[in-house]
Amino acid sequence: MKEVESALPQKKEINYVRALDKDGNPILISKEDLAQVVGELIPVATFQKSGLWDKKMVPVWMNAKCLLMTVSQECVVNFLVSTRHTYVAQNTLAVVQVMYGVDDTYISVRYRYLIPKSHELILLNLKYKKTEDNRLNIYIESNDPVISILSTSDFSRLEFKNEVIKEFPQDAIDAVEV
Image 1 (cartoon, helix red, strand yellow):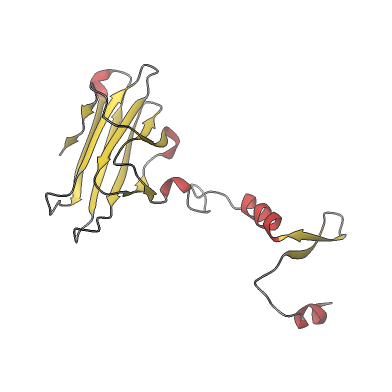
Image 2 (spheres, helix red, strand yellow):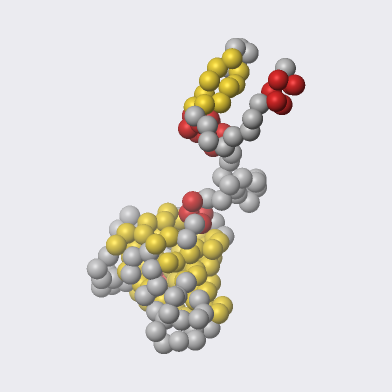
């Protein structure tokens, strides 16, 4: 059997793959169905286990002004924000810290540029607002359409949104540059 299989030509353009079902009977499985089965077996990477990169970490085409994310529980979350400007030689890289406590006195959003802004044309504006259902909305404005969240300290408390807004809410609070 191995000699017969080793003599078969190797091809990348296929429609079906021969396999065995759980009872050992030969079957044909479509390329698409096989990809789905294999994909479901590969976990998303976390701090505890290896796996694939979470789709939340992929650079996204951002709207010029949007609701970036919602923080759902009390926590301290840090994340890196990167932009890729095509008209300025340097990118923007900033670390953002969101502190969200049960009391309004324990809420803040602070950021620091790790790569200093080298050009006045670069815009990165962060704001936040506590909602009626006790979530914390984080808003972002940038003149760069490609924003990457490079890492975060805790995905379990974040929900990425990227929802278009025309204006920031009037009572949104400016994040503090430190």
